[in-house]
Length: 350
Image 1 (cartoon, one colour):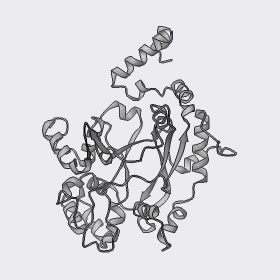
Image 2 (tube, helix red, strand yellow):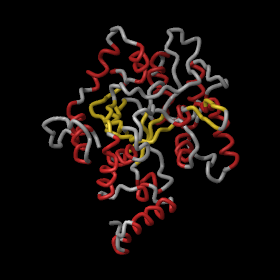
Image 3 (cartoon, rainbow, N blue to C red):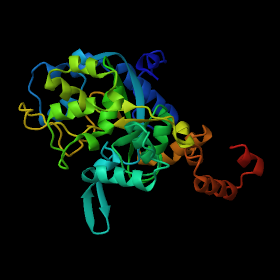
Image 4 (cartoon, rainbow, N blue to C red):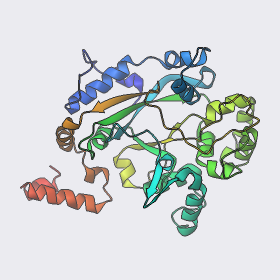
């Protein structure tokens, strides 16, 4: 749903003090969206030459500059996290702890993808585009640079309430700003970073990265447009440093049930003036919780049981969100039997 559609909804007189019910949650979203400043106001201080603190310096390259965006409207998307302590970051950028060692998985991105494609060629087919390949790997549990988000706020609320019973959850409300340029080849290039960087350290020149991207089939028909738009390497930085919301084919019924999309994260960009030195670092920065293109809704830990009961009445349950996982459905079936529901109620999903 776009922001303009939320503006048509009846606005609450004030923002609820706390989310105790689904009604509170929806009212909080509407209130926040209705009172959100325009993208121009949100980004103005980052581009007017004013002094920025360290956090703002990290955020600036992820903002869309006036010259590269339409932004007359923004799509509103959601992600739920069961603990407010969690960063907003894709799985491949998180520390991978196994037994006695801890690894930075991004260093192994190329190896992970190559081995998966070699081991399961009938699943991860060579004909798949980079985004399609990552989305399919995400579905099968492989760590990728994609972060799951949803068009449905109630789905996000469900995930914010599941697990971590002793922790407050959170729902992140994202504002997906529109760009003038066609994002298709950019998103494919970011998903294809592991092939486009020429060194294992992720240390590569901007012009080399871009020239290699231009030679890929997904850039066909776009090269002239992009060469004209991004003659200046600083403009290249503004495009390749911004996380992008993407759609991908729904390979599983789960994706359709969760009304899922993804937030695609690029490598961290070198922000020094001497871009002749390097362009990409071998790291991914989390989405800042102070980012002007998002809002955080805290879900109190004490409200989680009530909210889950409310959501169940609306058909938002684990078995509905993971319909291909029979084990989840059977576990829910047992819970319903134990709670003394009748056979007809269970079969009719009540």
